[in-house]
Figure 1: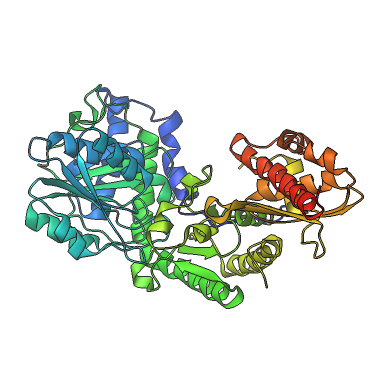
Figure 2 (figure 1 turned 180 degrees about the horizontal axis):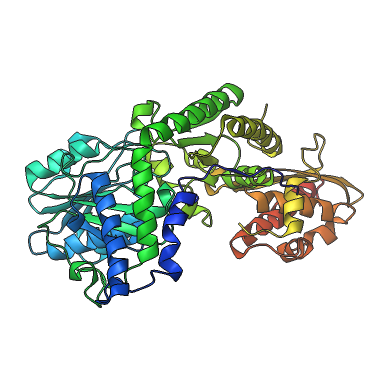
Length: 391
Length: 124
């Protein structure tokens, strides 16, 4: 199969590392390689870089540097936030509220707590994938200790009313955690104004390196430590400090916030063109998620194509040099259709035929055009093979 | 998904796509909720399969096995085709990822059902 094109439309799965980020990281492998916890000059040099990165990350979300804790990624941050609060507050209550469209890092963590005797309420979403604040109000009980609602959904880009959730949580004295892994660099966030107590993020989703994440935790909020061992991260998260990755994440978030308006304008222009063309050229499809762009990540387009199956679409686009994901990237090895799409009312047989296109800052209109062309061909070829299609 | 070149080729350029309008036997297995439906139609003359076509709703492996299985049964007697196991289809494709083996089972079932349909129609 000739592969003269390489069009990457899976930026919600991961992004490339920005060359400016790589450049910033390089000295911390071979030159400034000291352990940031060491007291000697080699350690102090590394610590200085870590402190600078911590300050950049704090600034990006309106937090204090002392509220930033480095982790191995979004999944660890979610696990720590939810389990750490559940166990720290178990004597006050055992009820947690989340939504039915969370990332598996939150979903599976809640399921694991459920097995340990916690009670979990999964808020439904409307047909655009957005929770209802009345449902949230009604779900709150005497013993609710935590609300964990994602900032924006990874599959269909639905931005949740996280500021309103924050205000409700604050008024009721309940801790609010948000998984902002997909939102950082796309959605402006101010943890103070938005009343966020805990926030998870991941470096590689905004052109930073993989294997590094952050949990923001409001000062004064008690949480159980997640990783036992040394006294790193104010004795709450043991493990040698990953200096190069932290430096990279600091640089990446600085660029992401600085360029947010510019990137969002560029990416949404391409996405809007793509969506318009797909709808105009292919019949019998569902455009999943919010129709109003202000409620949707600028990068995301998610479609279900009736009568055909998602993996086949993915593989044919793959052969044309176009990288996309079917449902959620994490489900690509599974046979189950996406629970997120089922929760917005996509029929199960149609959910099997879903593709997420997620655009990034380096994509071009020409790439979107080529993708539409290949997508039209792919859908046509596969539908002609399908016993469900009779046209 | 890690498919070998043979599977990719069968998926990219499948043979025998379509439906035989005057088929002597038709088998349709699977269901849309599970994400795969395979329909195989056969033209049979003197208990020998002279033509086979398929229409499949499913993943790349389902399409590749449909193509390969229909290719394999062409020219077989119905007894030979009834003995075509999913393992033989997988062997012909030089292997499938473990979670995709069920696609080859569908192909075997669809062929068996098409032959049963033929037998029933012909009082055999």
